[in-house]
Image (cartoon, rainbow, N blue to C red; front, side):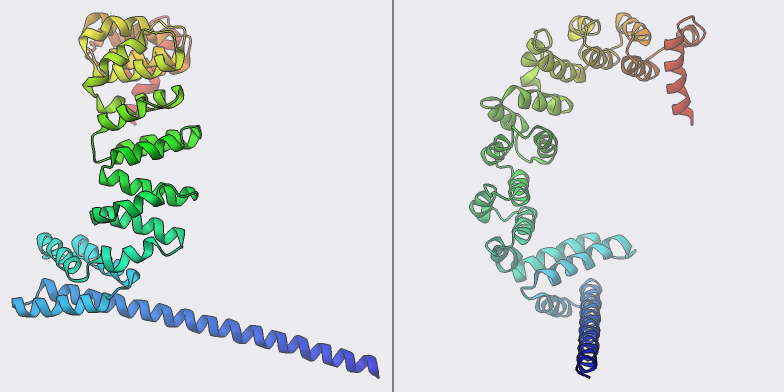
Length: 358
């Protein structure tokens, strides 16, 4: 009898637990539905206000719609973001919407609610690293330079994500010293720093030359090579002497970086140095030199690229074929390669030609 009572009690407790769990799930679903409905209602109201501003018949009615839109936003960063999204959607979809009017609307909303001060500044000291990082990026977009000191402090955070977002904000602001300090702080993390260096130089709004010079003063050899490779596409004239010296030196990694950077200029006066590099024992250097020689219009450069089609390394042959196909070659040159005895050269050219026509 006692065992039966215990079993009944245990069953009732299980049923009670299941019932409570069901009620909790039901309530959570209700809350989720309420949130979804609330967000959708806000979006609809924001869209109506944006349309009201764009198509207002008078200036006073336009001002009233802007006031209503600003009041709807308040100091809620999520609602502010939804408002900006509503404006972006009108840019992409409204045929008769004046883009300048949309830009003016953003400016007037920002003047009215001051998002940097009322929305994002409190987030910088919120303690939530994700909100802090997001606020840093938005501050940069809003050009809120008055908060540079706060963002600078966050760039020294022990949180990699927060430090990255703060440093990226400083990058958009063109803060040379701060960006250089951040990049130096990650120089020993090779895989991470290589990606970040490329990204930061691409996004930097200040002088890339000044940023690179600042880094060259302190960085280790690996970072120096990474920076040189990153700078290749920017063709900064002031660094040409350094590239020429490095391309003729004995440091293998530096030589690779400098040949790549020098090749990007495509200068006739560099042909002799590139010709020497095209015969280097390191195939990476040979490939970089061939790419540079392909930018020149001389017969010797053309012959060097043609000879590289027979290189023992597949990557060099492929680079030569891609380069040769874009040079000023005659039908006779192409026929000689495709119909010649050099199987490697013919195969490399056939692969490139096939990809260009498929």
